[in-house]
Image (spheres, helix red, strand yellow):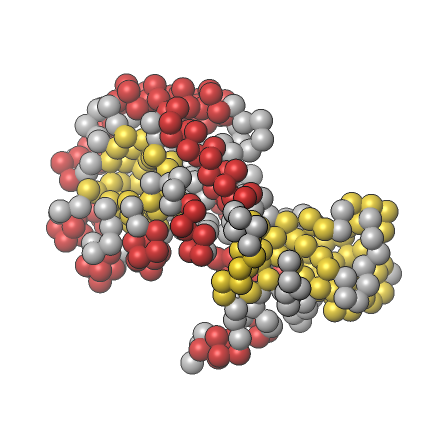
Length: 368
C-alpha cells in the first residue's frame, strides 16, 4: 500500500463484510430485517457494500434520514426524540416509516404524514447497558412512552412499535428473556401491529454469540404476532472493521514516557472520552515496553491510556487504534483546529482508496 499521510481512518471492507454476512444469516434464519443505524455509522463511502446485506437505514434526525434516502436507498426509518413541524414536512419526502418518540409528537404531527407508515417508541421499563449515560430506561428517561393505556388510545394511527432498550447487549439469554417479556406485557398492542422494531444495541455479531437461539426467538415472536421484525444494527454492523492510523510526533518523559500522536481523543475518538474507556491499540502488538499514548490537543486529559507494547515508540512510529468505526467517525470535530483524519477504504479486492480528505477550507467553513 502506498504510504499515506496520517492521520486517517482506514475501513477494511473484508472485515466489514464479516459482520454483514452474519446480519444476512440472521435475516434468513429469523425473517427479521435489519436497517443500519446512521447515528452510529454514516460513512457512505462503503454503502454500496452494505446495501447488499441490509434492508435500509434508520435515522435520528432529518439530515440522517435524507442521507439514508440519497446514499443508501431502500427503506428509510425516520425517528427523532423531537421533530419540529418543519422537520416533519421535509422528512416525509424521504421516509418509508416515521417513528415518534412521544404521544404529543404523534398527535401533533401525524396529520402531516398520514400517507406514511407511523410508529411509536415504547419504553418497556427494562434495559441492558454498561453505562447509565446510554441506558434508555434510566430514571426520568425521555425516550419512549411507558403508559400502555395511553398508547392504546392512538393505535388507529400506528402500524408499528419500536422497543429500543439495549446498548452493547452481548447476552443472548438476556435479550431472549426481554423479548418474551415484551410479548407477554404488550400482547394487546402487538396483535394490532404490522411491524415491531427491537432497536439496536444488540451485539449479535460478537464471536461466540448464540445466533441459533436469537434467531429462533425472533422467528417465534414474528410468527406469534404476525409482525415483521426489524433490528437496527449500528456497532454490530461495523465493529472491528476500521482503524485510526497515526504517527508519533514527540516522546516526552514525566515520570513515565508519553508518546504524542498526530490525532486526538477529544477530536477523533470522542466516545472514549465521554465514556471514560480506553481505546485498544491494533499496532504495535502487546509487549514489555510501557508507555502512555496521548493526543495533540491542549486538553490536559487528551490521553488514550497507558499501554505495554512490543516495540518502543519513537518519533515517526506508527500507532494504529482499533475499532474506530462505531460512534467514532460520526463524532469527529475540529477542536483546536487540528488536522481532520482522512477517510481511506480498503476495498474487497484489496485496492486502497482515499475517499475523502479534509483541509483548511473545511475547518474554516465549519463555523462562519
